Length: 211
Image (tube, rainbow, N blue to C red; front, side, top):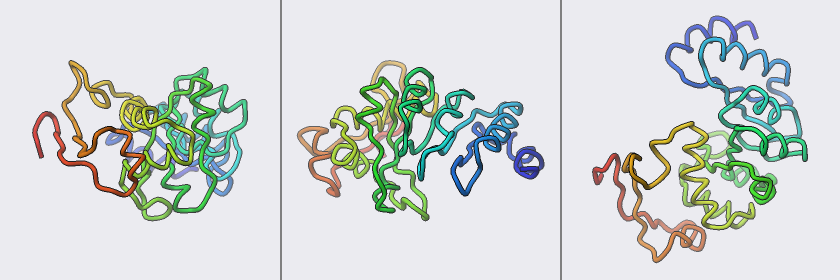
């Protein structure tokens, strides 16, 4: 605690925008996470929380309480957790690649969406628990395993992700947004879920330039 709220934070804060805490049994508990996130906020960083991935706990409600941009994972939620997310500004970022890789229970996206929670979708690419960078794969998992419609999954993977990053210049196709586009070799975006594992992206534009 002394390290991450002192020398480590002092060294990193000038080069960072976020401060992220893994609030879970075996990691930082609720009180420790609050102390770390508060220290980060005092240095101008915006909180994020890895919350409720492995078990029920205080992470989600702590994220909402401290105005975190996102609560990531949100696998094990009580009614109070869902209500807090619905009433706050914190985005629930769901990471189905982790559940796929670890054979764990998937988050109940339908429950969150029906409650009015803003949901984002991400691969959570890391070599420990979700070594995939495929957004189409995560869209397929979200539809098959988490109760999302294809429209909801694509929105969560684009506009929802932008909300979790507190950005308005990406995640949407409209005037004023950055022209980052992916063209599918498919009749419809529904094929992202209908044909999992098939490479459907035929072209990509970054800031309006074909790459």
